[in-house]
Amino acid sequence: MNTQQSIYGLTRDQLAAWLLAHGHRKGRAELLWESLYRKRLTTFEDMDEVHSDCLRLVEEHFAVETLGEHVRQESVDGTIKFLFRLQDGNLIETVLMRHKFGLSVCVTTQVGCNIGCSFCASGLLKKSRDLTSGEIVEQVMKVQLHLDRQGKDERVTHIVVMGIGEPFDNYDHVTDFLRVIQDPKGLAIGPRHITVSTSGLADKIVEFADSDLQVNLAISLHAPNNELRTRIMKINRAIPLEKLMAAIDYYLSKTRRRLTIEYILLKDVNDGTEQALELAELLGERFVNVNLIPYNPVDEHGQYQRSEHGSVLAFYDVLKKQGLSVSVRLEHGADIDAACGQLRSKQLSR
Ligand code: SAH
Ligand code: SF4
Image 1 (cartoon, rainbow, N blue to C red):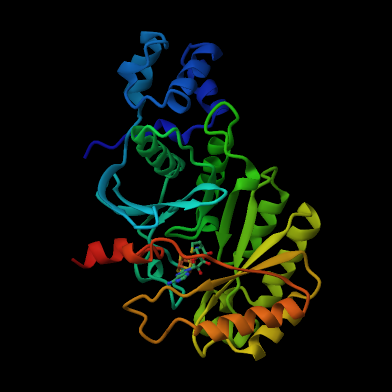
Image 2: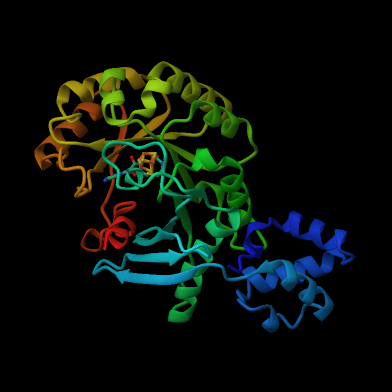
C-alpha cells in the first residue's frame, strides 16, 4: 500500500522549518501555504508559483490528497454527510451543517473510539487508530473544496470536534489540527468559532487550559451524579465527577471562557426534573452553558429512547429557574443518519 503523509498535517512554521532543513528559504513555504489554503490547489503540478525543485522535493515526501470520497449524502435541510476512505481503507465521517450564523464542519479524530459510552454509535467500534493531524485538516479542506465547486463563494466558518473519536485521546494531532485551521494566512477560522468536545479526560482538560489555544471546550457530562454517569459512561469509573469537576474548575479559572456542558436527554434515564435539580446543584454558579442534546437513536442501543418533548421543556425550565444558561441543540440531517458514527457503522455492517 502506498501511504504518504498529508501535507495538511504541518503547521506553517513546521512547513517552513522542514523546507529550511532541506535547503529552501521561508518564502517558498509561504507560497506553498498560499497555494494549499488560499488558492486551494490539490495537485503540486498546479502550484506553478512555487519553484519546481521545491515542489519535486515536497512531492517525494508528502501527498495533498489522502482521503477519497466514498459516499456523500445531502439532507433536505442542507446538511451534507461525507464518508471518506482513508489510505488504509478505514472509513470516517465528516458533516457539514448550515446555521444562521454560518457553516460548520464536524470532524472525526479517531477510527472508532475506546471510551465506549453506552449510547454512542462510535463507541461500538473500538478504536483501530488515531487520525493524523493531516487527515483531520483534510476533512475540512474536502468540505471547503466541495463548497468551492458549487461556486457560491461559501466558506466554512465554524468547526466542531464532535465526530467519531475522543479528541483528547489523540491530543497532539488534534492540537496541531487546531493550529493549522486557525492560521490567519490559511483557513483563518477564529478560535471562538471552534469547539472541542471531550468525554472528560481530566488531565488533558488541564493541559488544554494551560495551552495557548483559545478554542472553546465542551464537556460531555450527561449525568449529575457518579452512579448514573458510570452507568451510561464507563469512563466515569476511572475519572469520577470529583476529578472531572476539579479539572473544569481549573479550566474556568485559568481561561475565564464560558464552558459548554453537554447533556444528552435519555428518556426515563437522566431526563427527570429531579436530575435537572441535581445538575443545577452540581454546576452551581460556574460560568457554563448547558447544551441539552436530543438523543439520536442508535439501532444497537435499543435500551435508550429519546426524551418526550414535555420532559425536554421541563428539564430546560428547571435549569433556567436555577439561574443557569441553557440551550437545546438543533438537529441536523436527521434523515441522513447524521448522529456521530451512524453512517459509518451502517456502511460497515452492510
Ligand atoms: N468523544 C467526544 C466527542 C465526540 S461525541 C465526546 O464524547 O464528547 C460528540 C457528542 O455527541 C458528545 O456529547 C456525545 O455524547 C454525543 N453523542 C454521542 N452519541 C450520540 C447520540 N446517539 N445522540 C446524540 N448525541 C450523541
Ligand atoms: Fe467516544 Fe464520544 Fe462516543 Fe463516548 S460519546 S463513545 S467518547 S465518541
